[in-house]
Length: 209
Image 1 (cartoon, rainbow, N blue to C red):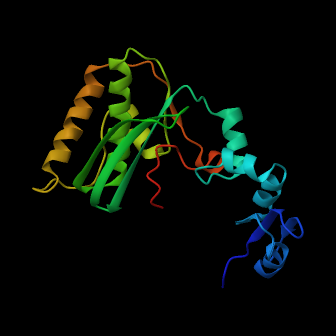
Image 2 (image 1 turned 180 degrees about the vertical axis):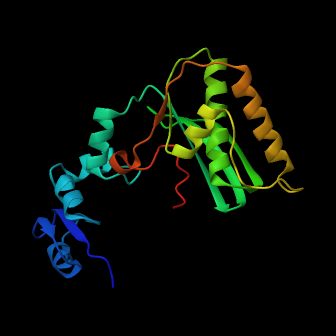
């Protein structure tokens, strides 16, 4: 059964929020320059309809619902970096990266590595981020959406059940280096949990979900 959608028409024969595609289609049919979009929930549609179509598009370029953008603006420290990882399979090809939260600019990226896991990538991304900030003599906070990785970093150990083999030997060398860095260095950067439910996907997300 198809999930129900809601349709906002900002500009058309008739404007408003419609509960079916047929109704939306009638509202925009033959109207030059019609402005409309579908949403997964009534709440998202109502938030979008509060602003103009162009304001919605400008503030929602990455597909983040407006209510989440508003929560981000109030609750996120944008003067920070954030990290994320992605893997194709578990284990599979894995990569990770870090971006500056305020601009979304990528500041480092590693991989893909063979026979890795997402948790390992999240752990390595956090340590890489901490080392990067230390090199820059920066006390900026760092966000991660992985409770597991944050826990591993605090314990200074990558507690993966993945077994090393010829394909992931280089990856396990990186893990050893990351663990050694944690044991031999101190840092004051706050490690913060990214609240995906309230703020949408973390900016460093690879967009493969």
